[in-house]
Image (cartoon, rainbow, N blue to C red; front, side, top):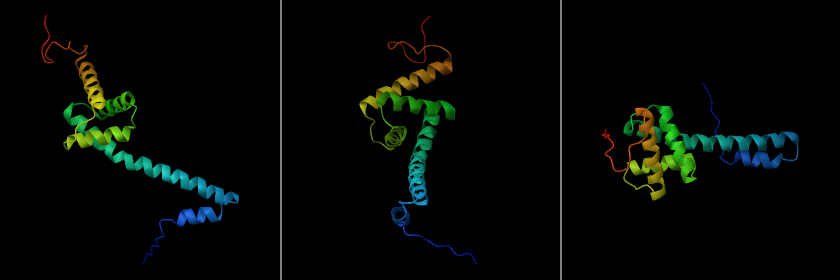
Length: 133
């Protein structure tokens, strides 16, 4: 029989505070901080993956270009990648994107389509599917 012991959620805090004076206590504090950072990173990961999948469906492309598109929007809007991904997921569910994010998404999609066709994006006065000769 395998026995599992569950520790209270604040156990690490209590143990770290009690032993912070010695080297082992400092290691516990450092490991706790690293663990918290990794948990936060993993928590944002699922929404980024979901948004990448949505971009891959809407703009037929691979995972790399979809992620690059989201990263580009994140940089243009000076917003974290998980926040951009959450906004894209919320937009899929009916909540509008901010005007800044809408413009960044349009620009990113134009670049993505242009790269896929191997040409520059069409002028604004021409329909995207036709080019004049």
